[in-house]
Image (cartoon, rainbow, N blue to C red; front, top):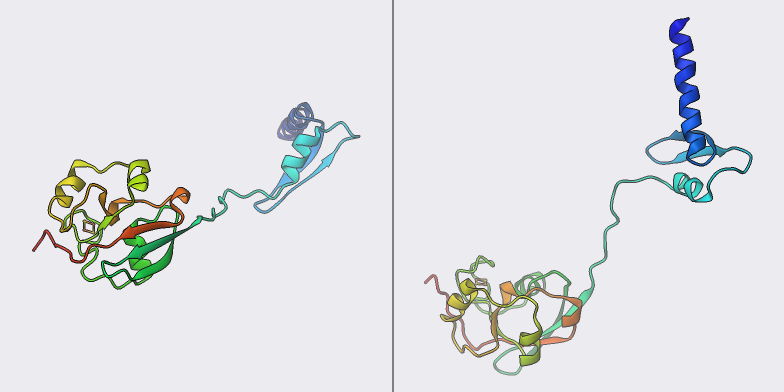
Length: 177
Ligand code: FES
């Protein structure tokens, strides 16, 4: 009997708390939905709407923007392709199966310099990530080094780079060889 009275008291306390939150008298959570009744029009519409929504802790997959990139070979051949925001230029070459001889030999571990690319000056200057000392050391070993050279595995695509054109040197030097 004592237990029953305590259970009733606990239930009444919960109901009072729900009412304090906006006049809710009943709500039953489940993994996929939240059902509720509202008492005599006293509920807060904001709380009611929040509780009526399906509840999920899964974050929606954000669509990554496509970024057009053109690789221009030393012979002038243009390879137009697309990557996604967050991809490196090495990812773009690999994911699109672009046939660049020896390109990306170390798979982005910053030990080969075969992913050397030459960027337009304005793009080079605007990139948020400047080359690190490790990248500079590796670039020193690359053929046809220019003032706007970068390693493709270190350049990450952003929406702002849509339409980027990069020059591919005529040959590569694998610093590991
Ligand atoms: S892939 Fe080797 S340094 Fe970029």
